[in-house]
Picture 1 (spheres, rainbow, N blue to C red):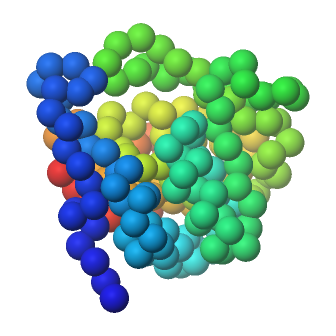
Picture 2: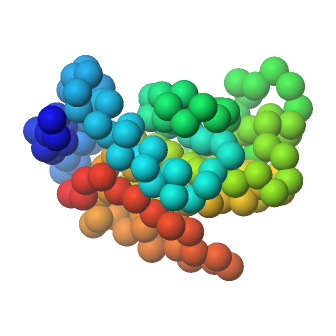
Length: 177
């Protein structure tokens, strides 16, 4: 049975600040059929890209990436916020959507040179988090084989920012708003 994933996204107006329509995937994660369908659709994309690893930025990337890695029988690499990893890590900074900056880190031994990595997250907004994750993967010698999201907020042009640079990557968004 296929479901319309849009029916499992709650819109919260004026959160986290006035004028913002927050797209919440909690209802999707809370429904086994919808959650499985979303992960399965991204798994089809990942198989086409012949990926070795899944990487996801903290924290919603963990929610999408971990079951995806499990379904594909491959590893998951968390991109953690700065200062959270216990061993030597490689980092990249990025601008936050509502102002300020943050840092992501990946253990330096998490990705081997040449490994093909799919970056996944719940939502693509401005692209900062994904570009920081991509930067770290490439510093470690990994190949970003693609990126995938449950939701893409088209008005924020994150896709354009991700596709800039030396090499475009395949992208999948299950839903757009």
